[in-house]
Image (cartoon, rainbow, N blue to C red; front, side, top):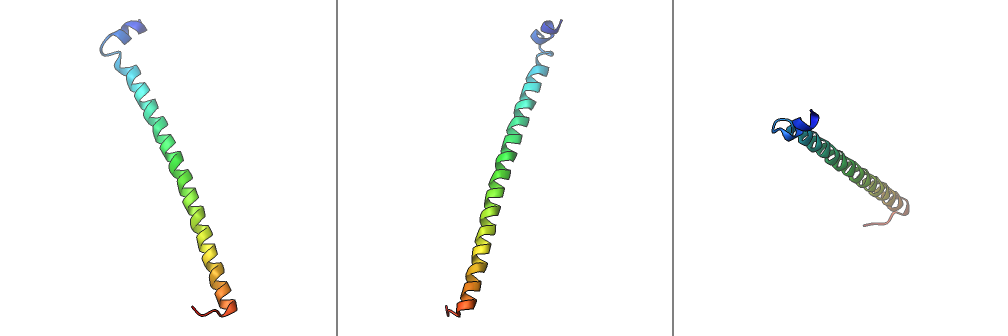
Length: 67
């Protein structure tokens, strides 16, 4: 009976829809994972740059180096 529904025009829509939604869900989760990795990388670089800037300002202040 299930095979008859798959061959039927109305019954073939359900498996195709399930495959489509699973594929879309996998693609969406993959893109979100990539975005979160990229965000963490840029956030880490920004924190490192900010820390380096603070260290340079402290060094300039301690050595009294005019700019």
